[in-house]
Length: 175
Image (tube, rainbow, N blue to C red):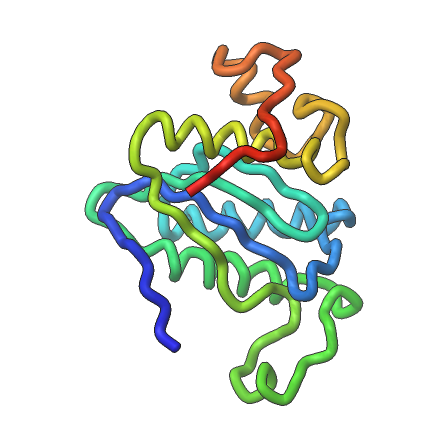
């Protein structure tokens, strides 16, 4: 099956990326550091802006803006996943199925990711709210400010959110 993705040059995208079988890889601080380094390495070769991000134990959500004239987010994600996987400790890698072995894949990440092209400023803000509310939604924090792996504090420093911002209801619609 061929996936069709909307690709616009220089656009902003929302992504959801999930670990294989939702394994809680990012409950380990060493893996958080490895993922940060993977992002830095890939951004140095193929620049993009991380507008917002939240990292939970088994998945992450983020907003990226690509450079003008560039629509290749897929290669960036492939490189980030590969860079992380290459340095990830063996105990974090699941047994590899024959199908994955044939494709030379490791069982660290789900194969694909979900993306959505941001349409306008209201869509951007809705997705930022979703990202920053996500640790509360999943029960990892009582308030967004309490979760350490998020761009929430950066948004507070820029005056986008007040420090006591409590986010959106669980039935928040995205799309």
